[in-house]
Image (cartoon, rainbow over all chains, first blue to last red; front, side):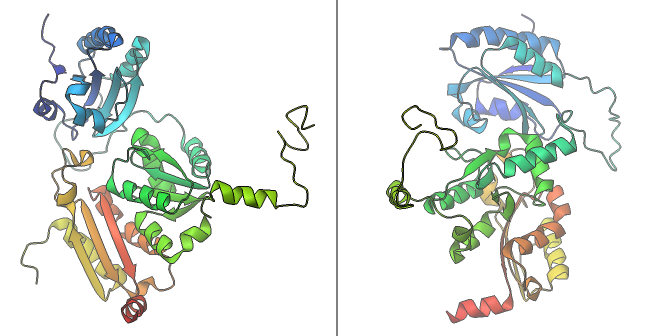
Amino acid sequence: MAAISNYTVIGTDDDFSAVYQPTTSTVYALNFWAAWAPPCVQMNDVFEELASKNSNIKFIKIEAEKFPDISEEYEIAAVPSFVFVKEGKVVDRVEGANPPELSKTVAKYSKSPASSATNGTTAASTPSVAAAPTMSAEEMNARLKELTSSSSVMVFIKGTPTAPRCQFSRQLLEILTAQNIRFSSFNILADDEVRQAMKTFSDWPTFPQVYVKGEFVGGLDVVKELVATGEFQALVPAEKDLKTRMDELIHKAPVMIFIKGSPETPRCGFSK
Amino acid sequence: MASQQEGPVTTSIRSTLTELLKPEALEIINDSAKHAHHSAMRGVDSKETHFRVNVVSEAFAGKSTMQRHRLIYGALSKDFEAGLHALSLNTKTPAEVAKASEA
C-alpha cells in the first residue's frame, strides 16, 4: 500500500506533537479507535480511504487506550470517535461507526485553499472563517437568549460538571456545589460557534461565565466575591433538601392534596 | 524597580490600566507558567497568557464587581485578541481596602 503523506498512525505521544500544529490553518481529522471494538475495523478502512482522497486534511489515527492523555483531551467517551480540529479548536465530531456521516464531515472541510492568497505578505492578514457559520447572527442571538435563560442558574464552562477542563471552571463548579445551588451547564469546548458568540453576547472575553435568571452575573472572581458577601445566595436560593421541601409543601394550605397532574388537567382517574 | 524585564503583554496591561484607572496600587502577577502544559496552551509560545491583577482605584467607586471587571476587560480587549488568555482580577476602592484592614 502506498504511503499517504497526510495520514499518520500515532506510535508515541511525540508523534502526535510532531504532526499536530495548531497554529496553522490545517484541518486535522483524528480517529480514536480500539482493537477490541469491531466497528472500528470498518471505520479505520473508511478513514484511510478518505485520507487518500482529501489531501488538504491531515488524518491521524490514534489507538485511544494507548494514548489516554490525548483521548482525555478530546473527551473521548466511546470508540470509534472522530474529532475534527482546526487552529487548536474542535470544530466537529462524529461519534460511532457512521461512514456516510464521516464522509460528509470530511467533505465539509475538504476545500483546496486555492482562493486564499498566501504569498507571504503579512500586514493585515484577515483570519479565515473556520467553517461557514451554521446560523445567522440573529438566529445565534436568539439561540443564546434561550440558552442563557434555560435554567435559573446557567453556567458556560470548559468541559462538563463531571469533567471540567480548566481550573477556573472547576473552581466555579466547586463553589456552586458547596453552596448547594442547582445549575445547568454548557460546555463551550464542544461548540466553538457558541463559544465565540458568547464573548460578544456577554461582553466578556473569558470563561467560565455565569447567568442567573437570564442575566449575566460575571466570571469566577465575581461569583467568588458575591458568594463571600452572601449576595449570590440571595440571587439564587439554595436547593432545599427534600425534607424541608416536603414540610413546606404539606403545610402550605389548610387542605393539601397530592395528585397526578393539576386541577385543570388531572392525569389519572383517581386524582380526577 | 523590577530586576526582571517585563514582557510586552505585562507592560501593555500595566500602561493601559494605569492610564484607565489611575490606581493607588497595581500588582500584575504572571501565572502563565502554571498553565503552560494545559491542552489549550499547546502550540502557544507566549509566556504571557495567564495573569492575576490586584488593583486599588477610586475609579471603581459605585461600580459592582462585574462592572469593574468589564471595565478592565474592555480596556484590554486588544490584548485578549493578541493572545492573553485569562485574567484573575481583584478590584477594590481605597475605602474598601481601608475597611478590610480595620476588621
